[in-house]
Length: 334
Image (cartoon, rainbow, N blue to C red; front, side, top):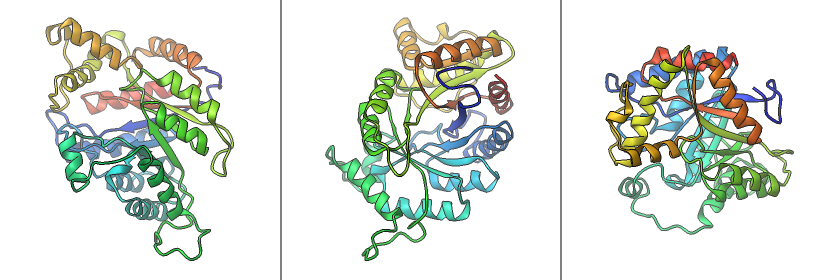
């Protein structure tokens, strides 16, 4: 694969929602995630991130920090982190302590990706935040600044200290699906990750504004962009497209506000959705690369030649665990 970088410079990583299938359970999904992490580590992937979502039956990554420890404890070198922690749901001190603990246990391997969305519906957000949803545009940047201060060691006379956490070098990423975090990450000299796997509309604009506004910092001298994309690989286009229908059904459920468990693949989506729903799902999943190795490579090369990113974070909602492993292995060989 080629883009403004070379293949050797382009990193591949994994974003995992720990999806629960109709024939599975949260416990089985977590064990599958560890198995996937162990495999992609051998295949040369850079990092393995877990998401924070709540009150969605198909997603078992609610206790994100605990799962990061589980994955890091079962691997040896791959970076493990959050994609991301939804910071408005938490006290910055708690996150500093949790990730300080993770970094202390697995030094040099922990990433902290931060988002400002709730990762859930309004009622669940109210429960998470103890009934406090009022926030201004400044609240997220101020919370990030507070979190960064807890990791810093320059303030000798701190009243409140994060222990463990203080003085540890934990990379902080800003995540987003719009322009807000792109601008903030550029202004502060932080790495930036865009959620183009489900919100593709502003990817190009967000990447451009991040690079234009980037200010070198103690954390990062050059801009660094990661884009999340959906990948479904198999040894034939027909099989890859069949496997991809599990994600299409998931996206359709989101449109219909029906968050069911991950469904098995089907042979014909036209029997399930109407034309408007098909159009909407295809727009939402615009940055999805599906097919056998050559088909996949052509699609990814075209994408990387149009969008200047340093890293691809791959999402693969494939129903059967063995098929998901196969998809990630195929991608690693391109």
